[in-house]
Image 1 (cartoon, one colour):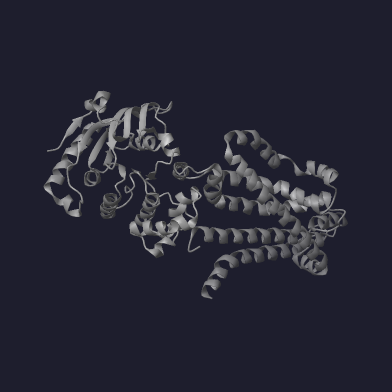
Image 2 (cartoon, each protein chain N blue to C red; image 1 turned 120 degrees about the vertical axis):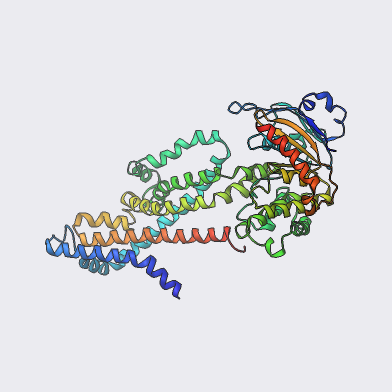
Length: 275
Length: 260
């Protein structure tokens, strides 16, 4: 029922050539090394089609965040090639390919209100206020914050509300690509599940391509169509697992036998990377 | 009302008690050991002297206060501007920071005569001395604040193609506000000292200011008046420090809490 390909499939570039042309994100033998930290990433290969929800799952220190930074163009690969929509990542960013990044911390500006934080991407583009204020308002509502919350400073909000504001700031740009770096890791389990359901609801509506980094198996299985399991030192893809459940997915899915079975399989793959 | 009362009890009462203890010991010491009044006048004599020379002290208080505030505002402005420049590149920092340290290490006594030669005596030279010695705390604190920005926020700005100017004005400067306020608090006290020291060298033409009053009174052995002047100087420093702290706290509260 489920397809688990082992890492050797992903080390041969030939396996990829068929989909290269259609891939929205194309990683070809991507490597990342620093003089002080060698082999952060080595020979990472994958293709992600437009609109797919992919999770990158791995133990801490396996290079999953670094991989996300390479995709965002914040970091340049020291080996291989990372293409976004056929262009190099740095270029893609400068050409205003709309990619949004959600950090592990909400990273809001503490002196700004939620509304003003969410407006930031437009402000940095020098757009006139009249063009975006309505859209900012809608996006803040979309992530489940009220009009009253919009006027508050981050300090006055709970951790979950801050993360919602951070999501709104990413979504407000109508991104083609959402890169999320363990955004719900610091939240408690119930809140995390709620936000998982909400992010899926928004994704189903807007159909951006999602790359979601997490170390939480249940989160990865619940959210994504596909899970890339990463192996640490050097960071590489150890397994590529398809998640066959239909959308919309609801909280009920977590209680099914199929969900538990797949979680077991994914956990096993994850265990194998640290043994 | 109760809150105010509690504030007075917890914040004002302890230092006031300490003051009373010191004054009592001081008074008793002068009486018991029969210390000459030109060596150590008792607190009553000092108070009497303060009343007698009230006009002179008040005018000195205002003159020195104005010089210190102008010197402080200049260092706040230029210190922050210099820090903004420093924040732009490690090369600029490495090239210019040693000269900023020069401001801190140069004995002001040694360059004060130069300032008098170049700028003459009077208000502008006193302000300049106050400015020079209060500049360093602003530069160091502001620079640290401008550089200690959350790296994720810097990434966020990079991802949104922010320009250098946008990153400075929308991220670095607002992040540095608490550090700049810390620097300003330190600088405010130093600016008063700078103004008084400046008057020692450059104040003898205008014949005003607390520093000049000290200079004039000391050789006359009017120790009670000297003490009164010293108290006035201390009071001025305390007043300006408190003022700047209150303004700083108000800004912090506005920026980080509540509705805008």
